[in-house]
Image (cartoon, rainbow, N blue to C red; front, top):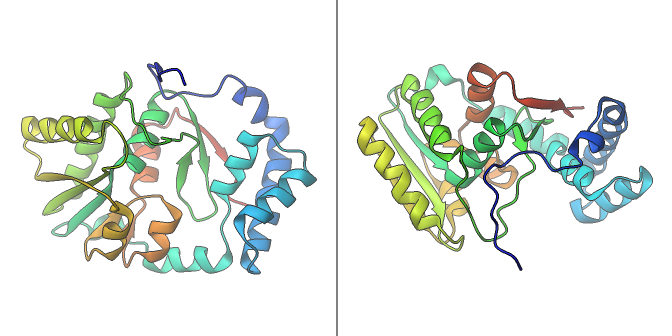
Length: 240
């Protein structure tokens, strides 16, 4: 396997065709049908194949609708536990590090972003066991830090996945930025951050579906940041 030498986390070369305006009605219908089946207890894997085959979707399109869709039960649960940005002041935050950072890197790189059924904005990037910083990484960290600062939390705890290569280097980079800017952040590299984030009493910053379904409180931070600071991002609405 050749090394990942990308300098940006931008769009796939064929995304302009796969997600052109003419494709969106079919993708919205597919995402809606996928959500309908998930609501009735069908598994994501089998249902995604069924819906994807029905509409002859590409792998990228299938990935998009899988990230956009969710069951009614998950949508309602996430709506119940969602908090307002006004409620963060004086509270502690916990950040799903790779999840947040990669989405903002993608936004800065003009990668495709999806407005999903639960109100989150998600990207189509995948880490696949290895993370590589891109040209937008430093700017993404700074944008995130400045936006979090305006929320006035007491402290911010970042969680990164130890099994992902280069997580230690990224942790140092985030710590260095926090030290320079005097942000009250800690950065931890652990084997199962999803479990620790979901079990935390802190307010969660994540758009990971499994994390959100298990979290007591969460803030839709990446959507707030993208809508306020990155309004030129490439967004498609599959919220069905």
